[in-house]
Image (cartoon, rainbow, N blue to C red; front, side, top):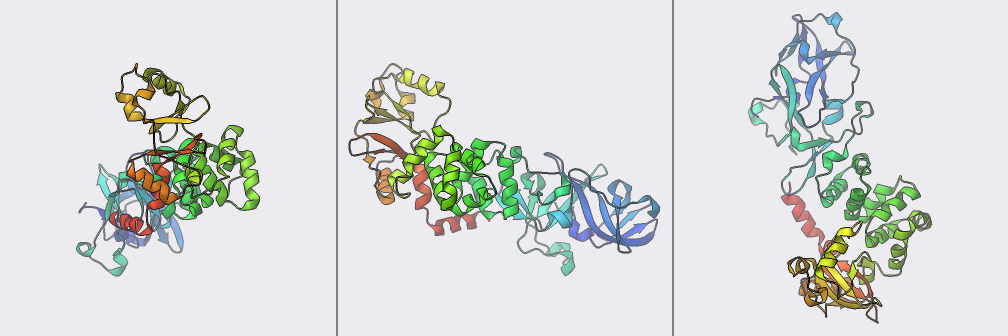
Length: 415
């Protein structure tokens, strides 16, 4: 990395054409390539208040001191941006990129400089300087005095949706390997334009998009759907867990809720309407109605077959609830217990027949303490008659018990 040539060491340098200085480096052009280091295609050069483009393959010298070509000035023309091209100073510096391999979690970093390396006569951008306090050549800093926070370009996903003519948009495959919670963190950090670019990529996979939106803070959820139609928001809610869908619906202005709810497909709308009857911070408001219930007398083999044949399983499936023919809770069996049980055993044989339960009016503290005391990932919610209404899962309780100071500490550790 010590041999890199940095953009801020080149910009404003003199440009020589056939030995005569004709102007200064104004900007540099990169061509973005999938899973490869971007090619430095050339420079914009300021000549008498106009800009010309000098291609990198026409250069005979590119150093910290100057740029030179042996081509005649008449051979150069004005710059016209081609597909996948961005300008470093105009489009990249001081803009965010997603650092996918940052310590602890992916995060947004700001490009303060771009480092080039030359291999077989082709210059490529291989690294960025993401230092918080950056020392540029405009401050006359020497190379040895500069403290770089270097990030390999291949660990980055550029956000260049603000460059319409670049014809480059964030694609889902660039971020699909990230966890929904990680993408939610990125959206919390991003500007509105950057957030819309990330969300635009997520729309290619509605189910994955719903997972990400579920992880967002309420204010960011509202930002995510601000420019969408009621129909689009209704479709998004249908992909979300019912309890999360209710939270998002309640965050909308009163005059919009009815239209959005009407746009939710009927099969997804019914559980949402049921949950709307409960306080958001109660067990009823926290619970999901998307639970799997089976007959206690069913064999483990038959139960596994039922699970395999379902079109979709609940997002977080830790337990199966056993109910009688009237829907009363009989017991609860962990997925891990099913896996290790003899295939011909009944579910009842391995079930906890007196599992801890809460009623829909139980508050968050009661739910959290009970789940912690019994080491539960899923807690049944029943009515006064013991009818199973749904379950509260740990992924809905844990975020509500994390204090702001813990979040700040985690963010500091990731720097």
